[in-house]
Length: 432
Image (cartoon, rainbow, N blue to C red; front, side, top):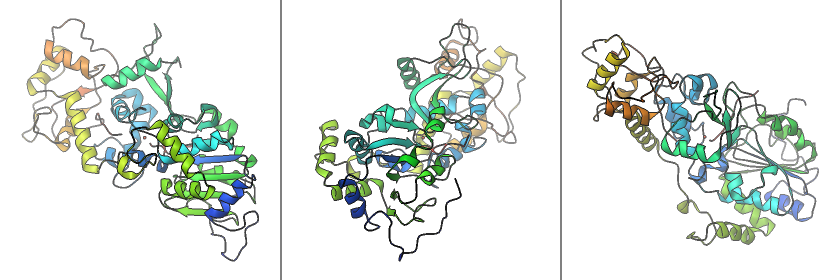
């Protein structure tokens, strides 16, 4: 397909298919039965009203929060090479993101309503949060372009890992490993990390927008390929509706493009009202949320709001403290047990993770290295029982080393926490 123009269509150019470039005209087009194969393309903006930060917002996005923790780079938490050497940052993040902690938004339920009415051809989503599934959209109608938490497997032998074991591991803060008797590889949700190919299902269905008679694009920056190319597959004359905070991609360059800029839920409410479906939509929401104070509408006051940056960092600090609290005495004991050289800390170096230290002082004390401890609970067992304890395996591959280094040594890894594609969490993913 050719490069789509980014120049907005001239206002004097009449639409080819719609009777006007307006939300009312799109609603009429649907009500007249002319839109029977609707393709949806969604991103993180669909889920921010649920309380899930997106990835790329400058102050509240996930990457902005992770950048404060001196990871090699914020995206390292979704880098497959980094995950192999240190999976703890991802699993601390996964604890905040795992399905079941957030409820679908009004927009998610609108997707389900389109499916219930037999109008949804396919939903392409960059999100990994599974809220489309939670809202009731059938899984066979969903293309999770950047994967999701819906299933998981070993990254080495590809053996699937049971859902219940995964829930338990994430709840307990453990790093799950393959159930295969001779494998012991790391387990990862089927989320597309940097360095991994997009799901084959995406590539097999990539040209579906060319068969659509209406495309609706919601809550995405369209900044990451190949997902960003999907709207361009729509044929000329096929209406494309953008519900987003800003104009993105080539949308607005065609005569039948309609742009409704602003909050996704607000845009969905206007569209549902124009269709005469608002009462039906609110009834679906109420049925799934019977205790909702609004009687069916998911208003901002009744949904979890994204935490401020300070709150995110405070939670991350708490997670780091809880997972890897260690005293100067314990560090010396570990070094003696492992026959590691004892380095004398410089005057400016502080004891390992004392209770009164903040994240900036904690980060330089953590790095990938020689001491391999499976998870925080094993570390606590070792710390309590001492170096002579039995059944304390320090020869597994989480690659966390506690050191008492001077400030001149930079940390290369740190356990982090936050709430998700590479997605727009939620998540833009890398191109394959």
